[in-house]
Length: 144
Image 1 (tube, rainbow, N blue to C red):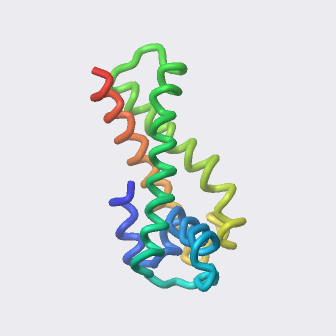
Image 2: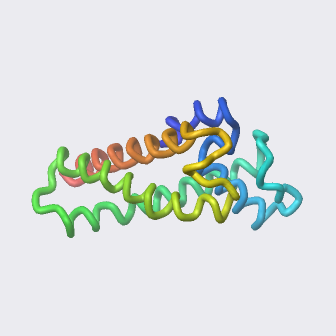
């Protein structure tokens, strides 16, 4: 997922990657109050990026840990195809229930009416599709 978001970051900065922008603001509020201006479009390095990626990978790991348990509970046949397809659905669900409702309250930007247009939303959505698909494949490989 992170690899699919790098082109958006390079083109639009942190505002172009919904998850990174949210994590920038959360990190700023928790650790770097001097960087609290959420509407900046800068590419920070160092401690700020460590915080952004810490939260990014923490969220991904927690959702990843939950995935096999949810899939075993919901799927009748567990194979690579069913897990991969369910992973895509899982990615869509994660995007819908964890990112869309919180993006505007955290960043001040609506995902549907973003100043950068609809491409950051599509980039974020496609990243979640890739995450879900890869997660499904990984769980399928590990469970064999």
